[in-house]
Image 1: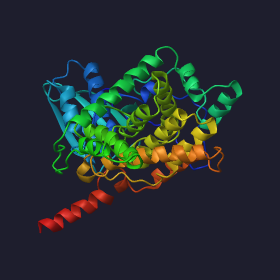
Image 2: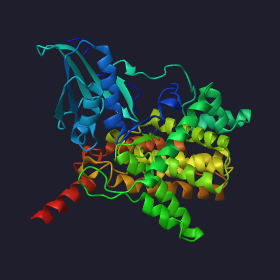
Image 3: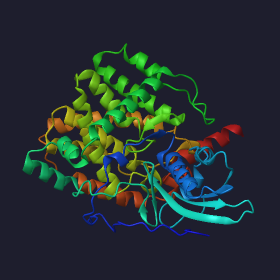
Image 4: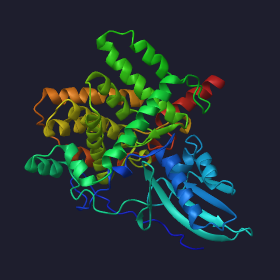
Length: 431
């Protein structure tokens, strides 16, 4: 067997007080990914891995993929098997499910093997799907940009840099990202809006067997009948539901930072675009600021629900949207940092316990509530002067520590929490 070895992950921290070494961060082009739902770690990541492995071993007659830990526990509900079958087609693939085993490096581990006609293993690859569609193996991040994009990897240092040179956070991102970033963010915004529009136009049940009906279209219609006070909440919920329901149905969305939290940022930006008369450049710079916040969490902690729970997904999305909203309201650097800090802080400890392994309950509602909270964090930060006691960087480290302390049944295995309670209640009803 060729190349079959465990991945070695780097950059681990031991406690709240420890920072990662000064390692440059990836481009936000690696954070925002347009792809098919319902899960960036369970659908996008395995699909990308399968496509890459297929190209490596074109002479293979077939393939075998062994899924470990969270990938196996909720893979069927997250359509992991369908993603793999489509990626390897027309060649056959055998999928082995091992939810009670895990690779030591990450809960979302998989082993891909290329098979000859005789069944002999031609080549193998162990790789982890670490959230947001990203992959990591023994050599590090797979297929990622390796150039130094962000030499500063803490928000405090970035804010000090911006203050020293009179830059906005948006300008800082544009400077670091270089040529093509505006066009890239324009495509991201177009994809976000397309997901909202499709979601608002579609009715009917979501797939998966829970019998959950789409609600975005109804919410949007009802919101138009509300007074101004309730209209904001109604529209935010409608837009967040539209994207989250598209994701749950396996539609095309943008990871922001993940599939499961993809409705938060588009909902907030769409609502503000309609109410603040924003320019195209306003939206692009708001996306840049949000991407920077998501990047900081991804780099210094995790955006993987299987690794740190839903606080790493919806919590990060809320922080991204809160920062973007504060930017669009003319907030100062300190106020943007404060809004992002609140967005993440008040999701600390949020578990990832999807009912039936589907990205539906409680995931869709969480997107809507996080969108509302993001705007509330923005307003709260704008009321203040931005000064506060606990920094965003500290909350990121606390989030990572909290996630590592969560039992595995609360980290995308559907073995505890709401998922288990729902199954227990359903069992009582049947008997």
